[in-house]
Image (cartoon, rainbow, N blue to C red; front, side, top):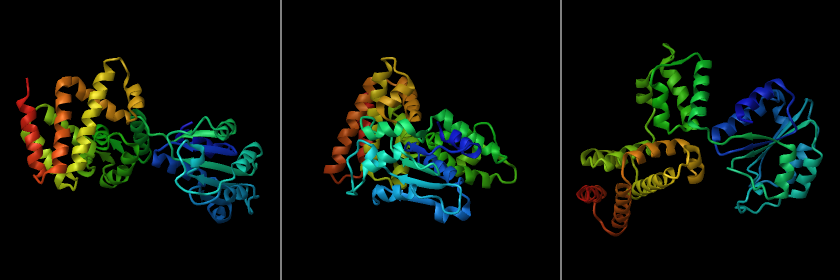
Length: 341
């Protein structure tokens, strides 16, 4: 189940007793939390809503709350945040959690309590017996990062519901500037609506003027300029990035990472892997893979490898010499262009 479906169900049906909200997309986690909060009248929330962080609070405290009857209300809501003991990640903190008591609660949940586990993780550890028991009784809701298509749809529905219309190219520009990150897209919706409050029409120019281009997008533009051996444009983008307080080593490391990704995409796509499979295999957002596939198709593997190795040498020089970063990048560009053909 996705968060949109959850919101519809909670507004029209009796809620289940146990839910797991699983995924790393912060805005979806927040939307799910807000939907559950709406189950409890505002006047009752002080007494009938409990929220507990498992990195600081023992699980037994949350379970005691969950087993209590609601105070002058229909139901109680208990939120268990960051239940890291359900994952395969080692504990970062030492909090004593009574997992046997939790297993017992799963077998005998309190009917008047809605227990929600807010799990901001990619996955749970399905090898654990506790996770297996949880999945038998809990409703799982996905808060995983949305695909480009789903992010586009959700944002369009939000804008249409608010009475706004997107003109040609506006949505594509928003996706490009945010790397199709649903959280970033929604974070800019309110600003775009304020800008277009009178006309109710959001234009591409509005997006270009209001939404900053993401670092990844700028880096892809820089990579394209490098591979085209357009030294003037590459240096201009590089200097702009330095002027926006990006450290030279950080910027070079990002370039190395992106070229590594392009090489991986080039190799794996030749094996017939789809965009979705590549994203899963490489553990990156599908939109980054889409951009990478577009770039990788246009250039030869030799150029990708040469640029990658040149940037490795540039990184070493940044760490071991006192030369200006712009000069080192310019030398990299000259050497890369010289080896062409």
